[in-house]
Length: 463
Ligand SMILES: *Cc1c(COP(=O)(O)O)cnc(C)c1O
Image 1 (tube, rainbow, N blue to C red):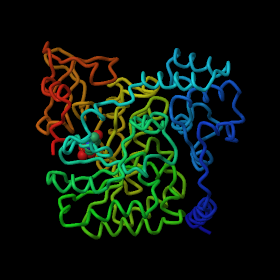
Image 2 (image 1 turned 180 degrees about the vertical axis):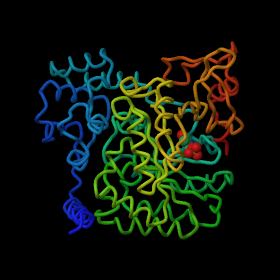
Image 3 (image 1 turned 30 degrees about the vertical axis):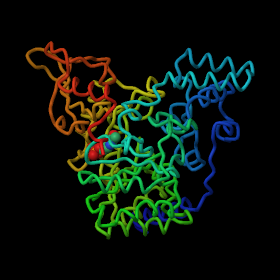
Image 4 (image 1 turned 90 degrees about the horizontal axis):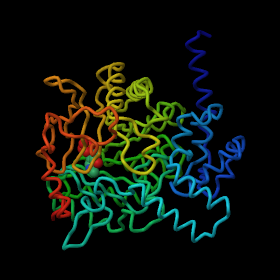
């Protein structure tokens, strides 16, 4: 056999052995002790995980444990960091308070109360999501819908408010802790369609969660099919935000209704909609298993376009080489790199955050290592209250060192693409820590944004 044929044979065998259906087995906070792979870790480390899992949502499935984590590299393994709680994710004080309660076996009521207090300190609702983005009709809030930017509406279907595993840095963590008032979800799909049909300027519907791909195909079809009516012809793109290509690629291969799901997506495409799978990838490791690649292949076959996005995260992907390899691999597999985000100011942010100056450096060095097809990524971008602000670079203007910034999305569409400047700050990790450059006192958008906050209205959310 020639080496090439030998190689191909080897690939096929490994695909067959790796592509066997496996059961979806998931572990949450109360089942930490049942995870076999954790038994090898010291008692102390397992206790620390339990403390953190009291506060931040924890959920992991066996596919991730068995296929994506290198258990010889704990705790540094990036996927271990991505899904398992780490001591540093809480402040020292919060950690100590919780650890003490658990150690002395405090009563449930006291533990719950402390859990609640600590969570409230972690900025559960960043960027005005609850106060500004939820539209009103006849003065009633339309829960389950967010409308921040003119062209795009976010919809949170109630059956999709969980994920196949949870990311430890998730900016939507507050949705998963069972606090009803914190959850966006919507049983009334009709409300969504009415809203969409009244706003011709909306071209994109982003179905998000949680992860909409946890839904049965039947449920997803109930949401998608009405979008084909003539009244919604202006909705040209249906985006589906998902991490299932990483955490449960079986969704597109072995799940009982995988075939129907692919058929549904194909039908939407053939009816003239652009179906965009907004795939969340944090590390190239997530794309390495045969089943993950098979899932990508099947999804692409439907005519859907897969676009990829991720935040930059310390301990997971704070390295240009990781991003360059990830983007190259995505392009090779036929996906389109779309966004690099700055870790948001919520939850375990202190554990994962990276200075803006570093974020730009990682982005630039990664971009330099890929061809033009990988340079479709926008970023690093902060999803802040006023809009998505991209760090375009660091430079000197009249001897002053500055960040060059621009809105890639704004609550006021007029702000988009307008460059502006902030004083360079080596430590800053978020927009609210930046000061205008050149001795100016306010950023150009600040007064208008403050007024929106004061009146608790976003221009988008009028009906
Ligand atoms: C990022 C984002 C969008 C989509 O913005 P695009 O630049 O079109 O990808 C829409 N709504 C919200 C709230 C967002 O954060």
